[in-house]
Image (cartoon, rainbow, N blue to C red):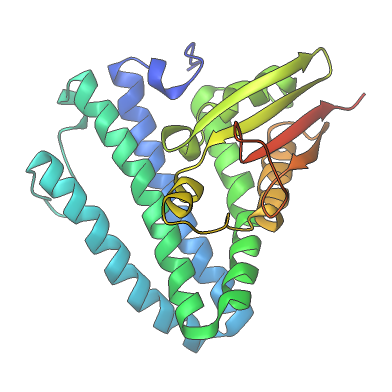
Length: 248
């Protein structure tokens, strides 16, 4: 089934319901990849401890938000009302799921940071992105019905369906037949740090993995260049910017 919408906010009700189901899948996969990487980097015992702690905290935060937002109860762990929701409620749920994904990611990061330090947390984070980015890219490709190697137009469309699209503000500029620049204009994490008077979180090492692997999973001919990402200095209108180039 081919999706005609250009981004997730333009989906009709049935497509939005399918998109929400896919967001559940991506969140679960990301959770699993965190466990797999902590196991690989730090051993099974540490991974099991972290899994127990992060799972309880992350699931509790997520379901608390959802149950308070909609007043629903779970039946055997499954909500049964997605297709019956109106469009506004479906989109609110989509945004909440995206924020829950960010909560889950943050809980995992802090679990490792608080128990083993920032270096181990960043190491696991970057390795996790190396696996999650292609998983998300392939999940989006399947959801949209993209062909193999769909070129820059396929990548532009896929970027509109990432989880970050529902959390942050992004744009595409400087388009040519063989390239375009993607900007993250507003970032929920960096904006929160700015409000607290903190320096930008230095996310460049993760971003290099994240965007390179995502683009190449959409189309193996696409090369990624970083134009700037914290701790790099950047203009007020964006936190990070990436150039995607279609190689011959």
